[in-house]
Image (tube, rainbow, N blue to C red; front, side):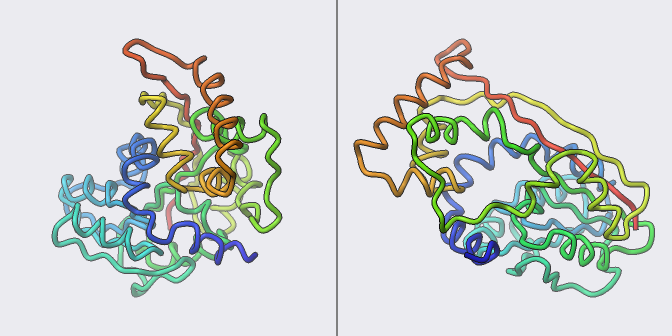
Length: 266
């Protein structure tokens, strides 16, 4: 299956489930992302792949003039509810429905790894930046580990094979600093910097199972959702064993997360 088509099917109608789960994990990088993009009061800012609108929400709080876009209608609608008055468009990267040099800053929080042609997407994001404007993008360190990989590890332990009809992300090769820097540089940005950011996501393990495995959010959720009840139970047993190693006080777990934050200047 074409990767972009797969992504559209994967995320269709998943805004509510994403907001309850993975969006809480990725929210950690909202502040650093906006700092890297130089977003302050009066900044004309574009939030790409806004999801539930957490990046836009913080940018508005900082006093920026915010526009946003997302490929999925339910995500755009959720962002509009969370950020009243937000100018939010439905558009699929590399399409960017804004005029040349419209923004002082552009940022995307964990969106570039969901695009079939990330180089073309970054080139388009550069187009809508004014000269001297800043771009900031986050992605996961590949292969995924910690919070991102626990359900996948449980699936693999049970012996469930990777489905033939699920394509691998083209971004697999860019999930390390040197390749991510090269990707952004080749799209025409200058002063490119990439840093690795690590944090802990503290969450109830049953909540993480529900949002990461049973809600069909992301590929792991799709794979678990295709299994029969007996296999799901085996995956859950493996998950319980793996996640127990991350336990902290109060019955919760502290899951490590590893990401890259790239920035550059037009």
